[in-house]
Image (cartoon, rainbow, N blue to C red; front, side, top):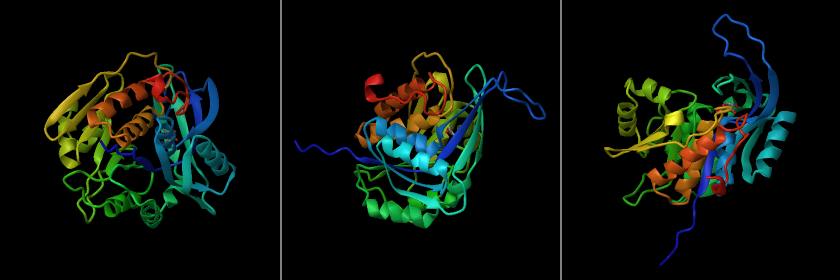
Length: 304
Ligand code: RIB
């Protein structure tokens, strides 16, 4: 029997420095609250996804842009230390590295404001060039999200060959921060859509999570809808699978969706089928909420 090698995970996404403020309550519009604690951490949805995929054992590349500043240098060093290949992480001469203000309440819920900085300057050309240099194989997985310009996501649709009867390079698109789904490129490629329940509702207008998952699946190559402590739904070709989550003590939900996407991409790159890869991703997301910060608890396979 000929064994297929595992694929690579290629993340096209953001790199941020997170300023994490623990608050007694998340402020309502017009309200001021006093934080009880302030810390810094590495973040950015793309970087969080890439570090997770690498920890889950995938050979991982990040296509991104940071500023020419101390934050960008520190983020790059951290990514390399996490075994993420950073040859396609560009440096912008003027724009600062992206920043996020993350407010977390005692129940672990968060509100996040991102200042995109250099992330907003990643270009479609840079994405297309990086993908061409990687000579993508059918076993590889490309992961995008909405924290980089929409043109960068469209560049993936244009770069990926049409999937043949035996599949092709898989493309996952995380709809966070909430935004429209990418148009199919010239080859008609659509991604496997990963959305949380709120995003799924916004994108489909369906109030019920199962109906939203089915509707999203029809707009892509399938859909995975994350439900927080209730697990996730996987919808492909008319079939719907509900995956329960383990019960854990929630400290901070920041970055749990990124960990879910990174683990899902790593599982698919190992050629796991979608429900199996999604079940591992649910466990990875549950692990991630047990410590503070977006990178406080990133799982390795043995942890799950
Ligand atoms: O999903 C969590 C991430 O969102 C944070 O790390 C922050 O940087 C924002 O990108």
